[in-house]
Image (cartoon, rainbow, N blue to C red; front, side, top):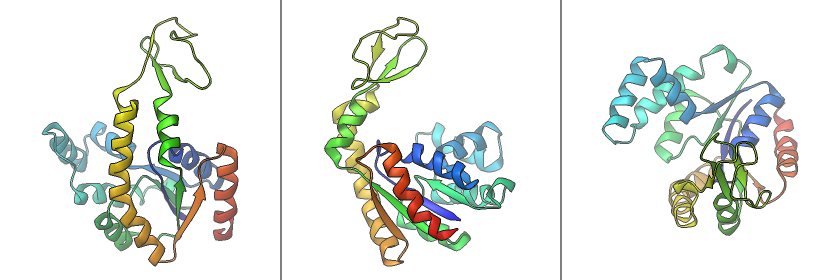
Length: 208
């Protein structure tokens, strides 16, 4: 089973990807984590990527695709894999199609205003790093260590709006691309994580 999860920041894509990959015993491939691992292990591709990052440049598609190609040949990918947040562009989707067939693309759809509410409610402890959400915990200090809580710059409403706009610009063409191939399925992500997961599993069970 080879899956791709698409979804804007705050849609719960990573959480769902983790649970679904566990359910089927397939590898969960997050390109961000893959990139960090290659850099940490100082592989040739990792060194190349680090050079771009250190210069403040985007890592080129060919480096990312090279990492993906290596990753899907690892033992834990023998039963399949799930891409979380990749591909991001049509060029990446074309390159992926050349190295791996894809069985289904799941788009987790959540209205922009709901995403802003979700993400801008996040709070982080300055001391121990524990995460909270204002809807569940409305105090200004960490219940574990008593340190003040703060909002990360990435989670401020104006930044979130920009992140969503960038995502929509990049990803709308991908939605059309996979729709045309008959691979795209959209689920309503504006519900409990359990309800969203039930819908995803109902779709993917057909592939087993």
